[in-house]
Image 1: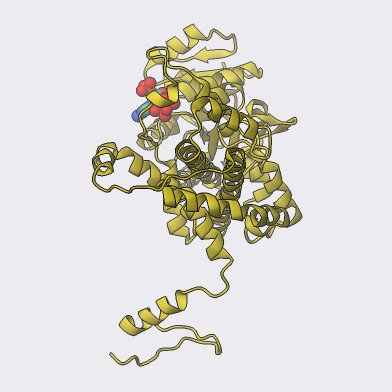
Image 2 (image 1 turned 30 degrees about the vertical axis):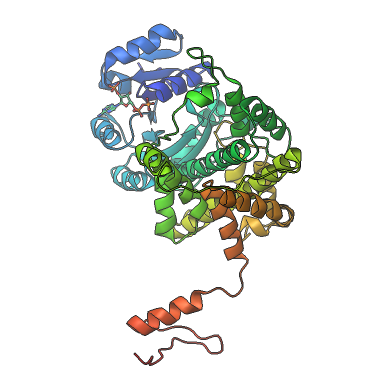
Length: 469
Ligand code: ATR
């Protein structure tokens, strides 16, 4: 009895919501979970005539129409390999396994090879948008063979978020491309969040704005060029009151940021591909530093700095400067994220379409923002763009906002406020526009101590100089 259009394995938050989303779109969905009771709860809490729970994996597999399409929504890592191992003997040639979890792209590349070698088909599908997204429309980043993708394109497009009617489910590239783009999405998300947090720090400590004022500042920012999901929720956060204490929620939350690892992978990939994604990496480091709460508290009374009191002549003007600094830094963060994608595309042979990727991020995912249309336009007018910062329109922004970014950073440094993402942003900008850097000295040093040779400004080739030591 092959009645189900698609199967989902893994009934935790993301898997169950994705399965319900598919059922809502008219697909008969077979569901399976290692622990059967978890699946029973999902079905009991969300009765749906198109959702069919199976206790045994062979029955689940046998219920699927061919070629079978099975989405894995299990914990990234060994669990994915384990489930695949159990599935393989039950599948037929041409059946399609899709991994919709947060797998590392290298695992996806490996699994693609292994699975396609035995005649099955494999897709690595990045899914972003959290619980709500999975249920009502996530941004989907499919990677793998186009041959397999054609069978699932309609389903993925149906369940995805739509931006003005356009599905956010564009095909990314072969094998690990989908999971890679999802990883970079998360790296950019870390940077976006860190930049917003640093804006909060300076507004609070230098501008002395209280939570109500911060709520209205972020609300007004969300009405302009910064309009985005993250700015919107930030405004909401400043409004919330803790029912336990009657204090603002933000003030009862401990300043120790957690993470699940995709930001760290992005930073590792920057190193692996030789990309300067320092702003993205600094946002990961900032989370590490935040987690050392005890050490920070101890150091706060030892490593003291008597910051001079800053008198702001015009607080409103200051808010505008922070806004401009944030927007300029955001451009730089995305420039780094897309530069990483560019390096990866060459390194892994993916032929990524950057305009398409930016359009895919416009709805459903955490970094959704008005801003992404501008990235799409930038790559639309020049698909070979070397760096987003030199696109005419972004360059205009950077040229007019760089003064604010410099001023805000100077104020933060004078006030003893740590702003790793803002400072890395301006440093990257300045490094990128420096025609004559100081790397000639590095080359001289390398040649002196290790005879590593150097290039000359006036002649081609590699040279060594006999330094007197
Ligand atoms: P969340 O969406 O909550 O982050 P997750 O940790 O990514 O979830 O994945 C949890 C899912 O992976 C669960 O469905 C879990 O099955 P159980 O309910 O039986 O624990 C599934 N899972 C984890 N390890 C597994 C394994 N070795 N084999 C099969 N399923 C596994």
